[in-house]
Image (cartoon, rainbow, N blue to C red; front, side, top):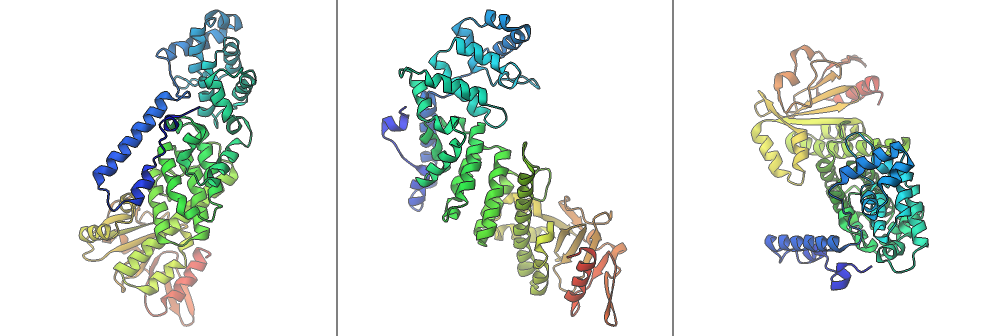
Length: 473
């Protein structure tokens, strides 16, 4: 099958063109290039043999079939004995209403495919193919695959639609099809977005489940390549167009764990952190990062590891910014960096002027991150505060070197609430929590679960003893 690009001999790549000449093309020209690229994609979609076409009376066809199926085979054959109705039925396989199951996900799927098989015309293969690609993960698709394989086997070589499916059948019908597809694309140095031209299907299918498994497999294989770091943008571009939360998580956990093992580049880490916050949310939040449907125990473990790594990267960045740029205290920065693996959440509070300056001077950090990890401190004057959450405790540090670190148990109602955008200094330095958490008595340390740790000479040793006693780290 020839696509519009093949017919027009048009193989223009807007992203490469912009990157190559980014310093001589103004923004309006870039927007024009991207707009024209979208027009080309629409032309390709319009003339594709695989573009899904939904009948206007899809709901009526759905209800008619489900009613007929419940009455029995004779009712199906009575109501679907014409090409017109059977053709509409083929286009309605994935349609569903409310909590009801789609035809293809019901107990009547085999009956629907049987009646379509009897009245089959080559034009219907596009609809069966679309149903396969759309429901690739969530359903048992062996009936659809068997249907397509049977019709391809009987093809007399005249139908363009059947020929188009047959040319790429190895990527849909073979159990290792997607793996082979990804290996071929990577070997040919192709980006994920190139898959549509490679398969000669419209990009409008990008949200279908087949391309979720494709994205996950491509990412998994690409992370094993030596030039992986150079190609992260291609994965991100595909994921944003695909725009499904489960696929984001499946791919990003692989990207995060791989990058953590091979690179300590702050720019790469911030690129990934920014992308994660934009498209999923704060990794410290279970609400955003719950496992995808069908995730096994290994998947859940890897996702949790990735979340932990993201939190560590972010905490490391903000520990540096707070203690290097605000508090200017190397001792405390080194101390907290030792425990970076245990930080699960944090927040920096400062007055409005410092908030504005912080955001202005750190524009490499996504606004979603800054809005989540920065808050306003009232009644603190020129004091700023860093609140860290570790295991079952909250630790509150202050920008002034003489300020003690306040420790609150997670169950203590006095502890700072990190979900609040504004907090007062008196809540961070609560008067009911001023007893010393670490005291020296001759050569011994006397410890309390909550209270203050003063930063006097040798404070690190006493604080380490406290960490080992109460956090077992």
